[in-house]
Amino acid sequence: MILSTASPTLAPGGAWLLAGVAFVLYLLAALPLAKLARLSAAALVGAFALHLLLLVIDIGGFGQAEPGARLGFGPVLSMTVWLVITVHTVESRLVPLPAVRQWLGLAGAAAVLLAALFPGELRPMASALVPLHFALGVGSYGLFGAAVVHAVMLDAAERRLRGGATAARAPAPGRAMGMPLLQLERLTFRFVEAGFAVLTATLLLGVVTTAQWRWDHKTVFSLLAWGVFAALLFGRRLRGWRGRRATRWLYAGAALLLLAYAGSRFVVEVLLARAAG
Image (cartoon, rainbow, N blue to C red; front, top):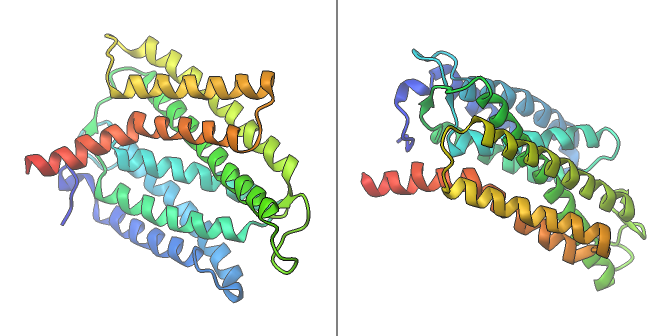
């Protein structure tokens, strides 16, 4: 049973087939078996490519009777996960991160499934700048998502150091997932800085492209997230925030940003649709 608010014509049979193959490949990428490391790495690359094709079909609205784009919570969440996997794919060429690949495989499988089940309605573009506004917004999601993944690794490494892991299980001193802790911390906040810049551009472009300003959930949560990230960067630069204090601010801002669009659309498209049905 399809739970989407969109009509069945918005999910062509070919797209469902691609989604199924990508879903299976992502699950293969999530296998924790060391003997299948090469297979899981290849599966992640294949799923990554099919995922991109699905995003082009899904969000671009190809094969539909009318022009437009599907901007439901499923496609937005799917594109965010894809961008995080993009970052991992680039980084894995420098530093292999098999444990991260497993988690991203599961996240990718869930994202592809949710995008197929809840694609959202096909919407016409009111302005030529709307696609740019949308692309920047999702780009900021992806950058902050990558920052969150790195922050989780950073917190895990610090917990191991504080907990005194055994010599057999402990990583090299001052390193996390094969990367020096200071380098990982700098990389984490490079993503935060880039995401903040893109989010700022998104909000400014939103003001330009919006005919009538509305204080809806998307606006409120976006501005709250912007304020949290601004406070994080301010505290880090002027007060030297590091460690758990900094990552907690990052997690809070990322949660607010996720609620800004994907969360509000989830309520509208899934919870309210079920209640109405």
